[in-house]
Length: 212
Length: 224
Image (cartoon, rainbow over all chains, first blue to last red):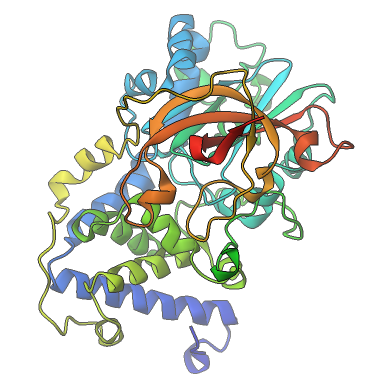
């Protein structure tokens, strides 16, 4: 991490030079591992495509929308989320043991991993940078209302804030409250209201009036 | 004992001076091509190279705190990947420098094929294990997080050590990272969700509506 490629990148800053060096080193390592037969580049491409294109917060939004629309499904999800989520085809790595956390008018749940960046991949995809960053990991447990304010969320002063630090292999999915004015909506339409942040607990779902 | 360790920057809960949370609008899944490759290489090499998730977490955090905090998430992943590959003599630094294999490959366990990718991801790595032991605690029990300072990998955050909380849920018997990260075996232990009052953690003047839970293995806890 020492090179400064000023000849070619004099308009770039220090970080960009470092990143190019990292980029070269990653490429070199991949070549070595491929030449040794330890990795198949086609498998790498498929891993990347899976998490870039297929696995993401739309999965979680489908789970939440179904729980809003179907009381029996909601009951299964609250009782044991992992099989309930598998019913919709979402399962596996970093979601082997999922727990759904139900928000209510008096209780708001918020999820963090202070020690690294544990996150329920099958339903939310890979975590955003802020979730992995020192500001969120340090403050979510000590000042959750301050963190919510960073996201523009203000809750009533007497709402219980329950923070969940994912220190083991249990992954948490927040089940936000269904917005009023959505009676009779289809699951597809409800899913459009469900944001990634509302399933982490740093946001609230969209409201029907947000679309008008 | 704790003087021996030269890492700990990952244990961020309740520390100060890191600034505001800054969400990025319309954030892409990856911010550069090398991040994608570092991510995929780490996932693909786990089985052939024979490391587990606790070893890879420890490889990421095992560096001086200043270094840890100055590196991006995928820089940490990539640094850990290099470390773990070198520790197992699967690659060497001179090979990375020239960008070619200079020595014949070692025999490794099954290489990840494209046909196996979705199967392997779907299977994941469940950590619950059968046990004949009985859980020492039950929901509602008052416990204290032990005041311990392990010199190696642990998942007991510093901000709860010595603090009193309540068992909220008995999760099951799970692989114990403090052993698994060191190659000392899975050593499964009972795992609990323990909830702490915010004022127990941050002082009597704190927000009375805040509670914080961790998931704690039995060796982290004592009756209170």
